[in-house]
Amino acid sequence: MGEDLSGLSVKDLQHLENQLEVSLKGVRTKKEQILTDEIKELNHKVSLKGHLIHQETLELYKKVDLIHQQNTELQKKIYGTREANEASRISHPNYTFNNGYDLHAPVRLQLSQPQPPKYNAPAKSMKL
Image (cartoon, rainbow, N blue to C red; front, side, top):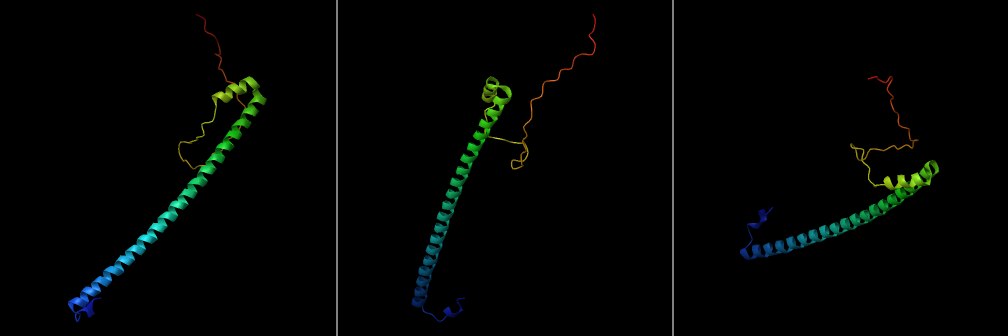
């Protein structure tokens, strides 16, 4: 590239240089416009995704609240009104869960009946 420039005059070279600068400016302007459009499009997509995630989060909170209400109703049926209200106040959901290892691991929950405490009575009493 540039091998055919040896026969050009200074004026021709200056004209060619000006043409190259104008062309280069046009290329840079076009590149800047394309990048700006891509950034706007990506920001729009991120905004939409953020909105969708927010909506999904709200739906999950509603589901957790519904499950909490159902759990309270089950406790009322099992323990009676007073104990269920106390248990509900004590165990209000925190909306967070962590298994301590993998944040994306599946969690399996299971309802079970409360077990009475087991007391180990001494086999024989000691005489003093």
